[in-house]
Image (cartoon, rainbow, N blue to C red):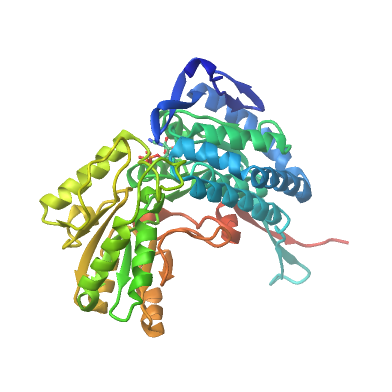
Amino acid sequence: MKDDLQPQGIYVAGRWRLTGDLAENRDPSRPEALVSLQSLATTCDLDEAVAAARPAGAAWAALPPQARFAVLDAAGTEILARTDEIGRLLSREEGKILPEAVGEAERAGMIFKFMAGEAMRTGGELHPSLRPGTSVEVTREPVGVVGIITPWNYPIAIPAWKIAPALAFGNAVIFKPAELVPACAVLLTEILERAGLPPGTLSLLPGPGAEIGAAIAAHPGVDAVSFTGSAATGRGVIATAAARGARVQAEMGGKNPFVVLEDADLPLAAEAIASGSYLSTGQRCTASSRIIVVEAVHDALVEALAKKVSALRCGPADDAASSYGPVVDARQLASNRAHVRGALEEGAELVTASAEDQGLFMQPVLLAGTTNAMRINREEVFGPVAAVIPAADYDEALALANDTSFGLSAGIATRSMTRAQHFRRHVRAGMVMVNGPTAGVDFHVPFGGTRGSSYGPREQGTHAREFFTQVKTAYISPVG
Ligand code: ADP
């Protein structure tokens, strides 16, 4: 198998090349199967990529907007034409089931289409000045060279939602994908190259995060860094980039609450929780992990949810009978298991059957009788695990929802518009879902959170321009 695979290169200054260091990329559904062999970049490659990006970015920014539109639109067209094939690769590489993987590829294609349009919508503002005869023009300019560091859980959608706006607004990109998913990154880079992206405008540097990721955050030639990943790594990236005055944006996960009130539609609530907590193997920063239920409906909700959860099947990503796929790797599985063990030691009750994991296939875990102080409710797990926390009433449920260091997404199940509106206003989260799962968001509206979840401006939709452009205010006084 290994002999049949051609190693995949890094892409620097418009050229693909192999390096001495190769990493094996394996299929979590069948860890004995290799998906690809990936050349790894060094910090010398980063220096070369940044040196190429500076002039290439300036030339890219100087093109008429329709030229950028054309490249991004062509990339979107190719992605949308190949969603089945891209979905298959993605599901082999990351382990999400085929329908989810194809859906992710579609989303990436639509993001490129949306951001192609954004390239054409960069008009500015004209203001009368306080000074007679002078006018004020406010325009947006590219930031320059943008470092993009992405996680493994959305191998094509997250790179798309950072790279597409970076390019749309005239920046050059240094792209460092997660170690576990280089093949989707290579494929996306090839698509952008074919779409006509000029050499040097984007370089692809797969490699270890602690080496290449850290070097991107620290590089004096990188003007801005957009990061998605774990909270601990994100805080380091923020500190490094900010210390040298670079612009930085970070998405760092969540500990998302889903509140169930006494007037909830319980079957709908159970469905929203089962979907939000377990699909995509719970490997979503927007996954609902703290299920806060008022006492009046606590037992009924746990019963309905247990039924839903026990019907979920974890299996190979390409098996149509699987509700969700394997955990991404052995390290993540061990961490998930340690969190569950810790919760049981702290007194949580296991509601679902404690089936043995086969390989990386982790059965869904539903815990009840937990308190918000337990570790299981303080730290992000990133697996198919949810914990029920009882609450006396709405006020206590809201207080528990807000008692966390994160603030990404929050959900509530209620028939009361008054309660829903109160929750929308008072829950400390960047995204709120009323009667729907906390995970699974649209691509054309802002994405991001508060407190420990996010740093810097929002991603996605028209708000993406806040990070990927800088504002210039010009005072123009014509003379005769
Ligand atoms: P996870 O633990 O889920 O893999 P990480 O935050 O470690 O999440 O990884 C997210 C991204 O950050 C990956 O591309 C990874 O290679 C990169 N990364 C890891 N360590 C560092 C670091 N010290 N500096 C910058 N990037 C890093």
